[in-house]
Length: 252
Image 1 (cartoon, rainbow, N blue to C red):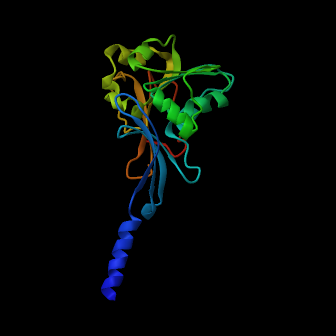
Image 2: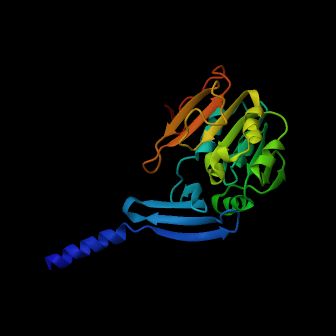
Image 3: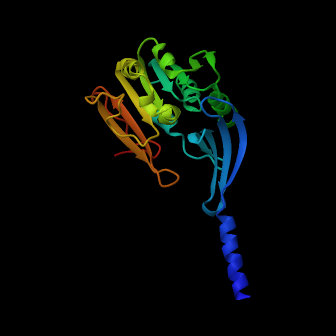
């Protein structure tokens, strides 16, 4: 009886630690399909929804509770100018992000453009992650999908805030997967007093698209697991200053 009881405890422990993964949606895309999966694991109360491109994570959100604001929503809010000050914001690889639409709603003087590699990411982000993004021109928000090298070179005029989602460019090898002209465009498109935001990390100064003479500030926020979220802010000088800690992100 004692052995049976112990055996039952072991089996129960194994079953309790099992990870359940349910695919909710899939869209064909190149080079990998884009999928939405729900992940549940009772042993440590994991319940989340992931957007995957192949095996690479593009976006995640909790299935239960409200959760923290996503890293890019938090970072952009921390650096926005006053509501009556016009600003142009360029998002790269953010087709599954809620930040662009939130910015348009919250800042009446902002004009926003989103460059995304895959239309499938935009579609599933809208349907399952409440991004409210669609390819096209919608008032002060323009969303385009395609080759990032072509899209970047098509951006006219300077931008005041540049947001690069590293998960959005990871499938092409990160910044190194962009052409030399596109990497230079990341620098040239930023206004003299502009700010570039890289996330969610891990980020370190010295990125190949970041001039080494520019100033930078790294922020960290404890992640849901063992990995912290990192946000790197970069500008030409320290004159504009850096934001105070925001939504759990602290300098360091």
